[in-house]
Length: 215
Image (cartoon, rainbow, N blue to C red; front, side):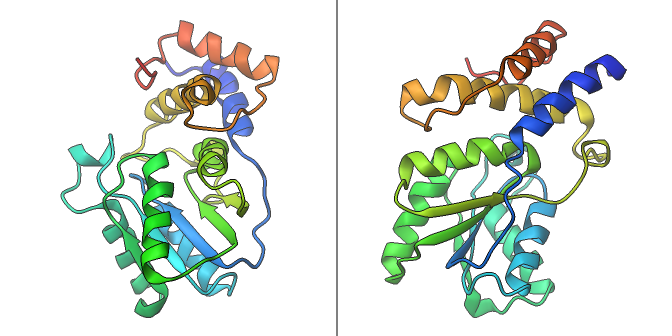
């Protein structure tokens, strides 16, 4: 049941997952694929604002999209950017990755193959995956300069028919668990989790928001 108490604790996680970086001129915009097409809109907007000369879309079919889409996330995102007026020659596509770590590793390979060596990145991701994307990127590419941003949408306005609030809460809970456990697995750099945020996590787990927890 989604009541006001649940929403209050979920908002605590939502706020924590945000890094509140302000996008600035960079060498490359890297958009990480997902089921949320608004992430593609945000990446294209930043390119059209002149913040970087290169726009990369990274994503094959992940845990969510492999059950609902037939074409890779990156391909679908790139079509959105083209429709918004981004020139085709500025777009690069990596459409084999299935998780955030692969997004970074496969993008490294793509850039090396193209002879491109950007130093500064804007990573674009879903709002509630900003922090984990930062931690993953810095693990695999620590020498690069990084800003992370997402669609500028309030928690109350984020859910849609396709992305209901229950799914959002389950994913936020799972991503917070991964921020806690993934550094020991070598997947991410450590990130501090305030006690109040972890208390909210434990309440939400206790209320049954466990669908996205790692095994």
